[in-house]
Image 1: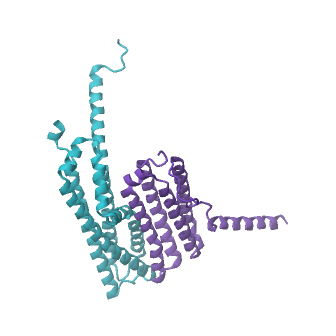
Image 2 (image 1 turned 60 degrees about the vertical axis):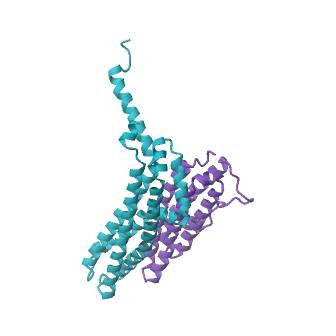
Image 3 (image 1 turned 90 degrees about the vertical axis):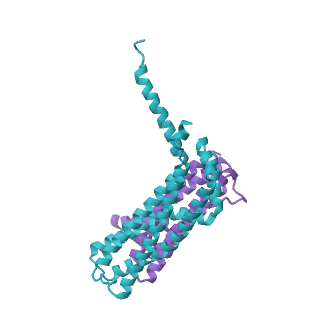
Length: 213
Length: 166
């Protein structure tokens, strides 16, 4: 009997840890789609903000932009294209499929194993639909600002590559200002999407009292 | 004499590598006999073809900047092949997979549309007076890195939809 691999004292907490980790992994899997959407929105937000930072450095040196700042700006414009890909693809899919997107998403939630989440999804269905509508609208607005934002960045990059003082003129300064305004709109709309996703997560997360029930 | 022979071999090898880079791709984009078979085997074959085309496309974006503006059409051609092979894969999905993955597939479609914008951006860069070599390099970099992100999403979605397992 002495040869038992685990004693009761060590096995009990281990078993408890396994159960807790299984439960938490179940819950996180169920809301994985929302969590992932928040991650890609945050990723895009970080990149857009970094691009605005690079743009501000160019604006501060628009009379004669040093090569180091031009190179950093170019790199950031490139990064933006790639790092925004996932959130733009999701936004476009939401806009292209419209209500069908929400219907499919709701159907997936209805198939979730945890009955508490299913119950919450059913209870908050009108609120979830409202949140989805806000996300759809914000996606549309973000896309509308993203296009001129990106086009402006590309134009500014070409001007800077041609001449270090390529943006010194009034039209150059206006271009930089326009880019900034469009970039800020994108940040604002991505922020709205993020807020709604947080609200959805809250709605679909069982509270402690429900867990005990 | 030996030197001449070496030079000739080198020239032939260069020509062949050029053909390999710019030649047409021997991948059938779509099932040529009516509608594609909706079987796990057909899905596995289509997915393998798509993975190969993604690799091929990414290699093209790596080497293309060395060929100047001539590379534009080649990269575009490879991208169109990639899109066709992806559409071929979609044709092998069954009704349940298409229904369950409707949102995810719409995202993959949108991802390809966004990647396609790199070509328009490049054309706009040419028109705005950007140096062609730089414009091509930027385009290829955006397509290479973007297609890596797209490929990761593809793998994730194929795994969720159990593509190749029925």
